[in-house]
Amino acid sequence: MRNGKRIYVSAFKAWLVEQALKPEVSVAGLALRHGVNANQLRSWMKLEHWQSSPHTLLPVTVVADARPAEVVATTNARQPTQPKGVMEIEVGGTVIRLRGPVDTEQLKAVLAVVRA
Image (cartoon, rainbow, N blue to C red; front, side):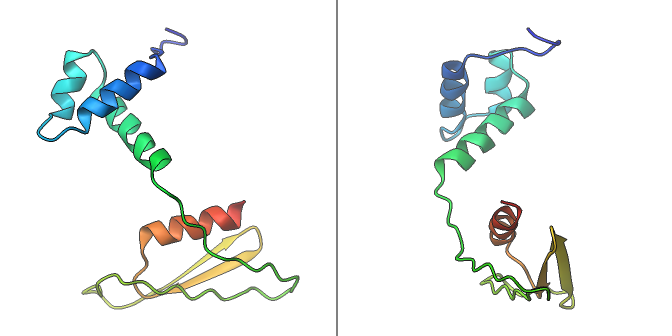
């Protein structure tokens, strides 16, 4: 224990995540049986999923231009029942303008590239 936080061995965390991903396993029950907070186990599961899934980068062209670039994102998402809106995000001088429904995963990937 360091700073009041428990330190778990990586092999134990990996094994616990593997067990939690099995069908019909109660994550809360598994965590309880092994003395781990269920929220902590879910966080390890998300981390495992994020690290094991392939990440697709979108092609980006950097242009030395004083005007903000307009990025139009298209998705295959279902149309929302509410009216379409416009979202504008500025990151480090780059403006990203999104119209209509936006796929969360695509937006995360675009923001990660812009921040890099």
